[in-house]
Image (cartoon, rainbow, N blue to C red; front, side, top):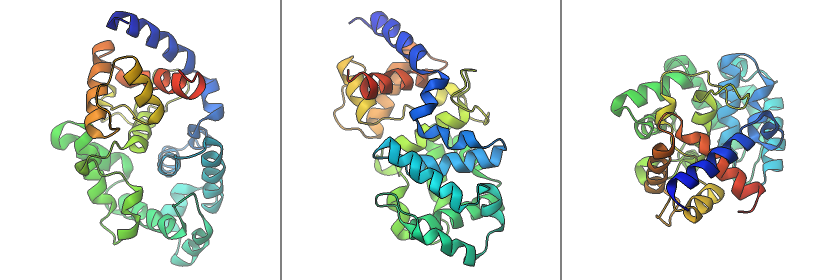
Length: 254
């Protein structure tokens, strides 16, 4: 297929999947339960963190986590005691366990009390080099200000080449807004045009089949390569094609 044909094909698929029905089977439905900005961004971050494996299990366990936070994630982050944190000890999603969960809450507490919240951290990091990569690197450094060596494996480190699929997905949720009712678009300090594709098995395989990605590993270099190609299709909103690539791979087995 010529690039113009690929663009037409992906525009059609993006339009098909970037619709409210997409929410019904997607983890983004968890933060959709909230209306306050801080609740949305915290619920979204925690849900994105455990977004690997079965989507059904992700949604089920993310809902369990919201229950443990009393369906008031921001209030829990700000005001919960060490004693209340013990209730998180029973949480588990694959290799993410109660100790990891407690660390995440403690780190988020540091971020909201000392760094003005998740949005401020990502946006400050973006300003370092005007890139999502610098935003992710800065976020990683802030997130691990409290001691928590074991938990590092649950936060992608792009400085070491990680594709950061879940964090890029989270940024898409928070930043992108096309009035389709899926992404939230509640942060405005990072341009939509600078977002990076959440690269996973589905999006990577479909991108390679369509000639959008040559690199074989799903790492940060691959994210940069495929996103740059997608910018030639739509410079203002390259990650709208996440819906197309994921839909083709996950739903259509392209």
